[in-house]
Image (cartoon, rainbow, N blue to C red; front, side, top):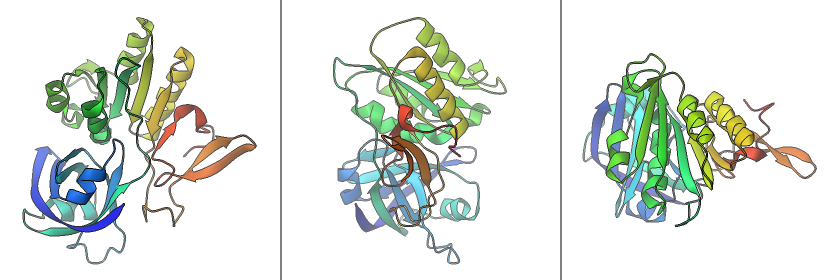
Length: 261
């Protein structure tokens, strides 16, 4: 983990309210593992003391990229920043995904909306190709499809309104695929908590391992404030663990979903 002043290379609209931010951040780029995130301080938002967490979408050489959606003051201020401007960044942070080994388990990635951002490095660095299941409310919420196809992954999209791909929830084609059979499958998921709960239940039903990246609100990003805790099973019962340090990626079997937020 390093704190670094990083320069914006580009900050461009991806689809509708989604943007892709690319930063010159060599130290962070070289250390990043799939599923990790970074914390950014947005200078135009002077009244805000806290940084904003963003999943690392790409890390190539000396640059990192994140995908974000304009949903509030912070991301709206970020969307107005231009190439050449600087941000303060801390990263890479958190415990990431386990990269599948060559000839081992076939990865099935499940993403809701910009949960796709947390999945790309995993797919890019996995020697074992698989299937990406991506879901959203409507067409504009389906992100990164071209990028995944370019590196040889199959993409199956669903939208709740039926405007693109199969109509329904992202878990529907996942269940259909698991029912077809096949050995050595492993699930990886990132998205809203309701989706993660559903994926964990499916993994248990089909007896396949699953790693999930939890979607909790993080304030400090370094394990101090305890606002992002998740209930995790232990030998003596359960305890809260921090999304920003022990997570965001957990084994789905270890999360106590009955009391998870």
